[in-house]
Amino acid sequence: MGSQIEQFVHGLLLLLAVGTLLPLTAQARIAGALSLVGLTVSLRRSPVLELRHFILLTAQLHGLALGLQLLTSATTVMEITVANASHALLPMAALAALELLTLHLPAIRRFANDGELRLVHRTGGTLLLVGALVAIPFTVALPLSPLQAAALIVLFAALAAELVLSTCLEDSDLDPWLLWPLAAVAVAYLTHFGLIHANGLPFLCSLLVSGIAITYLGELCDRHDATRRLADPLRLPAYCLPGFVALAAMARSLVLPAGLIGANSLLIFAAAAWYFFRWMERRETLSLVLSLVIFNLSQCLLWTELRWSDPQLFLMPLGLSLIGLTQCLNRELPAEWKTGLRYAGSLAILVSPTFHIVGGGWLPLLTLMAASLVVCLLAIGLQLRPLLYSGAAFLTADLCGMVVQGSLEQTEVLWITGIALGSLVVGLGAYCENHRERLLQRVRWLTATLRAWE
Image (spheres, rainbow, N blue to C red):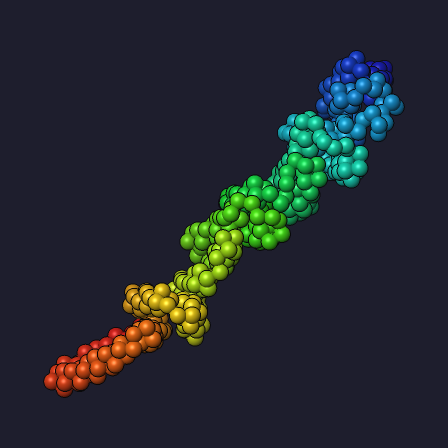
């Protein structure tokens, strides 16, 4: 008799819980909540998992009914139409996403101790949210209200949290790499509704900062067993974000009308600085290469925005970058590669002033002399023969160019120079003859020293 009464009570509570889903009134919500609480208490020791499954499903539906009650003026579910409830679609989708997160609460996990039940709930909720995401662009009118904008942000944040929790807390088949397609969809929706401008500098700056932060977050996840599955899906794509920001800023400067001069190049330079810091921290070859490439792109973009076209502005940073690359990767690069890159870097520095020498004037000659001296000093400091040879050769050619330039302006300079050079040769020959052994000793020492250089 007692079991029959208990079954009757259970049936009555189930009927009340389902029946109160249709009315959108406060009385119906209270009655439904009380019936669910009664069922939960009476079935807390029941081995029938299907009843617990039903209670969870009904509780989620009551949560959605409460959202409809607060957001619409309808008194029953049958009165809900697209016309009078389109403004409630985004908040309802956010509420459904938050309900998915409740399945990870310890109390819910103990109540529905079967993983398949939570999987059923999660699958149904995910399908509901996918349908809502497809319908949102066609049913939600612009502009969004503050509540709708907040609901859209909460919706994607809750979906990302659900994916992370499913990966970390459960043995889920969900791939954590899905976080990035989800992020792309979120950016598309936020751009569609005008909450962000994907072609604006603030968005690119936030993307750069996010990439740096997520990279370190991925490394932090790699230190703990529970979150190790998230390490590579977070770290590897986030590592590429600064490079993507640099390309996007470059494209933005070419397509959009010029705004604040130097803003795009500064953003690109920040990406280069991040990769260089990453190389100093991890000694990753790719980070150094990306840093130097992006740095030169930022310089080129800056000079283009300033409408400066002097080849020295483009070639000298490139030459220094090549020399710096060979020095930083001294152990990784083969010997023939290092020699070629050093010659290429020194020639890029030294050739750049020669474009203006044919036009006449002393400034290009003086610039070439300064560049040659800098390359020679750099060669002595780094003990690099290719830089010393090229710097000395261009310094000699520059001195000859100065003589020619002076003779064009004043013809007596040429014969004065010839007399002085002849006298110098005669005097040098006499000095060498008198100090032959000492000079030979110095030459042998210099030869041995240069042989030890790279």
